[in-house]
Image (cartoon, rainbow, N blue to C red; front, side, top):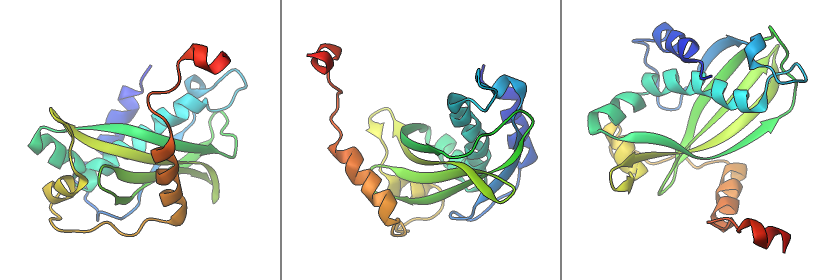
Length: 182
């Protein structure tokens, strides 16, 4: 089940607090029993859901949420690359860091990481797309609607650009199941 109450708490906690476009949003969370998998650690799918708890208040604080609402646009995750490194066990407390890292001709890129005691537990690179009834909204239009017209994306790190390039080579649609075994 989606953690609606936890999300509402996070949005409420940071209401009215703004931050710069490239500042890092930090929130604090607990791994509850219902977040666990059969091995008694944070479920990998639930990790992705908990990242929402950082991304939603972050989007409000940088003006993304307001711009989307004002324009009647939506937002979708168009790709993600998670990396899991340390176990998160029941009742572990952790910080969730969220920041915008840039954009290209189609997507906006953010990164998020969970930290505990100064150690990175996991990390995710996300490719996000603003959408309207015609499809993807150009990121320049999104950034302008957020109050930053004409702003250019900072140069993204080599590893981010390498992921973008790798994703561009990935076939779509994927192969049919019979082609995989054939």
